[in-house]
Length: 176
Image 1: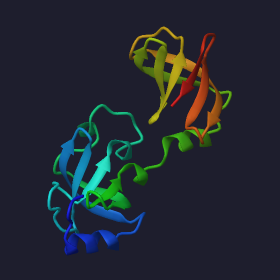
Image 2: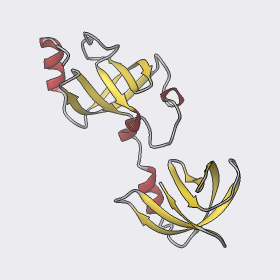
Image 3: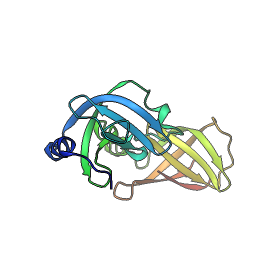
Image 4: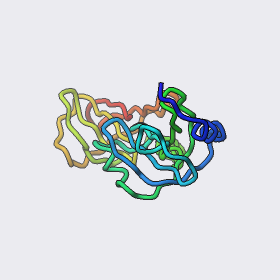
């Protein structure tokens, strides 16, 4: 457990979930991003009081946090919770943008043919991007990365965050 000190503790306890905080990207690490908050005190150990985990950076799939944020860049985040063990504010960039799966589902896509781009090929099929942040697995489908394909949306399961698809004239798949 990291000793926070009275000023940092008071600051963290004053935050409420959903509150928007501004700051700058202080450090980009393999496990997440540290943010120096404009209105917050310094952290005794870490580069910033705010911390964003990889899942909370973006709805879109990415390889590195540096694909989403830039060191020193200004940022506005949503406060999620106070991490008492690390004495930090857990933040989200993703929470400030619409959920692409909900946006996709709102277009009533079931039964529609959708054109997408193969983003990567795996031994059991290919991942296809149908909309920004909505990517699916088309099972048993032989394709090349970058190839444009057509699929038919057969089901949208928002609770499990999956969309079932089938290839036009071929196999079945699942969007993630």
